[in-house]
Image (cartoon, rainbow, N blue to C red; front, side):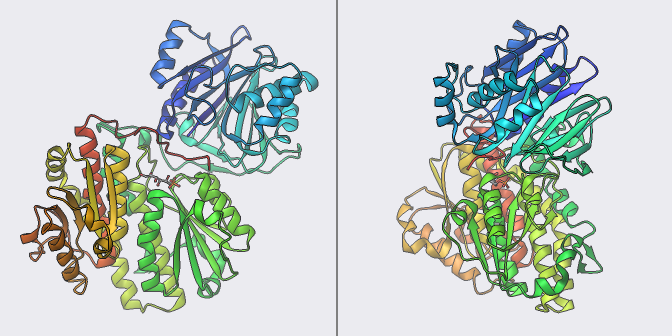
Length: 617
Ligand code: F6R
């Protein structure tokens, strides 16, 4: 969702920095964009346009903004008011001398707007953001300092916000504030940056500082000051960004998605790196809990949304089998608002690629307020959810730019499996031989994913044949069930085809009514060796749908002969123990959705209506 970038420096490159930063934040999803720059003559210029960045670039060619050293830029994902030029940010106030951008939702903007209207202020947009801009303009006129004006404005706002503003009477200063929405500082040499995430400034610096909840930051070319909402100074901690700028480039691939799907072997290998020593899982991030505290856990609640929640569903099978702890997997937004039972021996594990998903953030905060210990699995350094958790296990998938999650999913499962094996060891539920066996399986996964990716051509051909499909079903059992759900989600979001995932055993309880001649059905088939009891049941399910005319595409282990007579198409995956099959079976389903969307001429990196980082509830 909304992307934010701010810049102050000694050279006249504000427009270049802002446009470059917005380009790198494009992946978050947006429908309009704009910048505001204080130019060389000290005049504030603002240009904004509905549509993609190319529209803003064209507008900047028609109406160039003079070079400047101070600026803010924004990509907007519409919430209050449609994606129009007027509603795009920045919003101006104080007679066009102040510009403000915003990510989040100001919940009490209605009464604030009424108050300002009554005082004679006027508005040009339908947004909640313009209310904050006008309020800030009014306060600036009163106190004459942006930082002080910010402090009185944030005290009046309810909801979630990152706000960034500049004023032409204070050139060389950008002020930002954050509550529940992301904001990170980039530390340069004679220049400083602000961004929704590090991608905004990674081209210029890898030194960063995450801003905490309810904090205000003021940057000038030579200084960074962080305070709380009342003006008290706050200690901050610098970190080095592990990603480099090229990691967030397409690198010759046709799309970020194609690149990221291909990076999955590395995403898993990097997540495992250094965390398995002589067959023993080592997670220093959990050291502060001590083994005894982990051994005392009686229940785990996994909270996440979308694809991350499916990673959680896969992990439930592994944690319960290996560590013998009951696991509930909950969608964050459902968990948060239903008075869930949380006891002091409940461990909450959140999963989030971005670390900014508002639903998950609110669920983590709620759980901690209720007394739970919260661990997060996250892919983004400096993000909010890890900061709100007691500990974080980072996945090292590298930046995921395509909106649809792929490499983060397999990395999440790998991290959760490490956690499950660690838990099993401290709880004594697995012996060392079993631990060795499972860690060896995990370490073999990157190579097996690489082998699975070799199915790319076969999957592309299948996708090309199926571009006219109106609905596609996905079936799986056991760990294959969340993979069926994930396959369906990928197809929906990328190819805009109605897709549903079902537990194969549930079919006869209703969904089988959907089967008619020619209906395509993907079936994730468990290994006949590892799941001897389940395999024949899935083969029976396949026969049931075949008998009703379904066109069956199976994802099956190499050498699974029993399934061949009943399949129209077979996609093979390498041999793996049952709990590890999801890490392989998901790959052809990702490829299928990507290839089908590509064959339909759709944008696989930025599907319609979606945002990468969902920072509103
Ligand atoms: C689907 C997808 C989304 C995300 C979900 C959670 O491809 O990407 O379903 O998985 O929005 O996002 P994070 O992991 O950032 O919390």
